[in-house]
Image: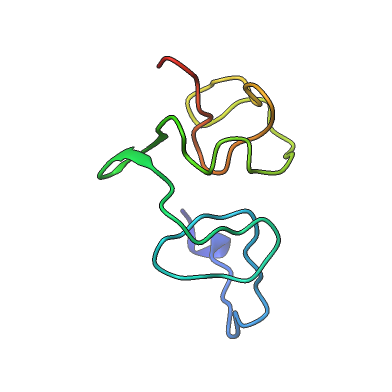
Length: 88
């Protein structure tokens, strides 16, 4: 990253997070959930079967997730960087 790419923010109080799952902090905003996201493991943010993040996201202008998996899989977009794939 170059210094010219850094954008300073003096006041982040107007940021609104949406479509997130957090079991530590309850956040206001559309689609947010206060619960365990059921990640695969510590530092492994793949979703386990039954995760509340599966099909709980919103449509985005992406066709694949961070690993190249086609999105959405099944009934809708998932919350997070990894699209859940059944049986994986």
